Image 1: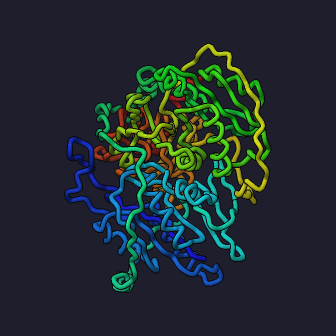
Image 2: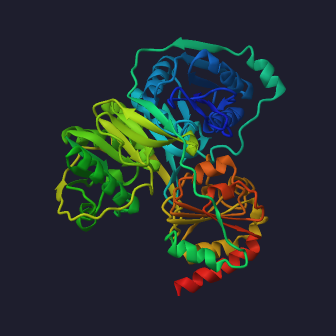
Image 3: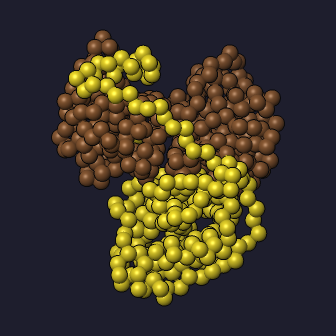
Length: 249
Length: 322
């Protein structure tokens, strides 16, 4: 079986976000770009599955839709252990456009298990995975917190309200993964970094596909009012404020 | 032209988020001079369906079929899109919860409809259609223009107040030609905890961080939660250490929640933690370090040792609940 991990290139999660061009886009000056945290965990789990020879996973490929400037993030994924990579040459517009591009490539390259992170830490859409599945007409399972191979077939843990389910779907399928899929993201070793330089990155040109949405303004969150401190010896005052001022208890 | 919502049920019952969805949709419909149709899939009694009318559903379409008892995103999206086409829907609204996130993107492709995901306010305008949503994990909000004819909104949980209306909705029962071959997701096993307040549903959450020092120190925190009728949560280091189950982890890579009250005990307030809780209406911080960043996010703070403060809080809460 072949696994594809879709990766997004996002600002490091500790970045202080600033905007430019009349608050229509993010100011990228000094921004460190990383693999989207959930995609990194998906990649880690994909590699763990491949490490077990009895699981029958032959290869792990990463795919990214983005401009040449996102290449360092793709190389990072290769250094962590992906066998090869695909980049679709496009400036990201919206989830629909990105999913359409990825679906086109998946049709050509054929994968059995397609992993996508639950959301990207920049646009927080939680859309691309499900969209790819619909473009391909294949099943998708969302809120996936575990995936393992049993007798050559994938078994998926899906989070539901107040619990979890073990489910299976026929391949190919898309799994949209979240917390729990892998414990810690795998870190690139020196050998991996050396090898990544020569691993293949296939570049596809984008197909024609329009976007359905666009962001026309970003706003910073409204700062909260200053914290009201209550004496640790007089906690009843806090309860009084929560009951009579905030009215939340 | 109409607004259609998909109202999920849990063992035949609706939840607060279902009524939030109807209340929200009813206001959107008012902005567009149209009505709200609610679609329910699976077995739900008429007495339960009628509750949707109380929050503004003008018409309720109910499709009872045992095959809808667990989620298959492909089949659900196909049914919802067929009904949306038949009802001539311009706007489809779904909760931004686990199942909403599974269904909305598939619907988007089927209907070539743009999605505003995790929307937390009424549309800023109808023409052009602009929605307001969280971006950069809570460090920003975006105004998203949906350009397609049909629009999809997934509504962030606990972001919209319930609005009661006088309503007498028409209930239409439909049968949908589905057969088991359409359901590709086979459920092999379900593990469910019952009787626990769900973190994502809770109005009040009490959460512990590394400042709790040891998993043995949790009883007073749990006691405070139970006195307040709250759910318990924790920060990432706590779940990574295995002090608490990972389902309790709130933060950027864990659960993203928006309760009315979030009480952070022994949590310093790293950016990644705040990303998961910054939409809470009120944040209370209890921490020994007066310079901890959590106090910048909190409206109320106590500088002090959790082990001393928590038992006193439990007493004070019990006093007012008498």
